[in-house]
Image (cartoon, rainbow, N blue to C red; front, side):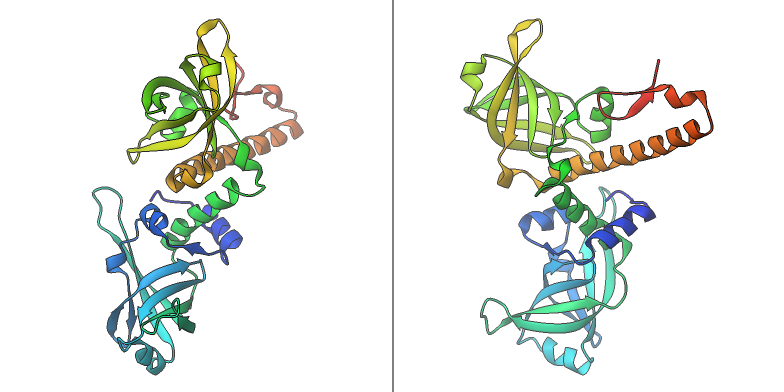
Length: 304
């Protein structure tokens, strides 16, 4: 996981401290949680458990009620420690840490007599690593779903945005009816993309397609399934067509959304800094106040 600034961690905590992340299969993969290494430490013993959900203030775990853990918790006045374990970056050791917790309740899991879900409240503020892991997911979800203005923001693919996003190449492929075809990325968003491809609009409109996008750091390939929903002509090229593609919401990888959210967040931060600098310059009467233009990728650039 890339290192986040203290300001970003504080923002995550203040915004999302009560929001919960359900640890389904995709979330376990995204976070790099090593489930077999997670356990509950109580009365000097380690007890296996499964993380069901977590927020920045508590964690819910599934435990075997016949293991003796419940009695140990009672003897420890409900105090314990959760051992978290996440995959490290490539070539690095796993990230392991303990979080002091206090049990505030439990209930049978789906009516089982052998399994229970225990709610454990953090005794102190969550470690920075956990805030970063959960904060990224919660921030991405908030910005990509519902009525968020960022949901529909398009990122035009230029050499600069390609570098910032970590896209290997804007030249990629799209599979239409199972047949791979070469294409060029023009722009992408949380839920769609626009590509340039050879063909006829009448043939491609409303067709299902699978778009491939390759990223680096780490190197990953995402296959985004959706449908062509509109088309545009490409000036000066009768053999090419620009096709707008809408991804199927429930098939979009969370890792892809996180990459888009990280870019949009970074650009907005840069724009805020540049705007503040312009305001200060204009107040001081500096000539540089009128010497910037807005580039197509949304980042102010020097006027050349």
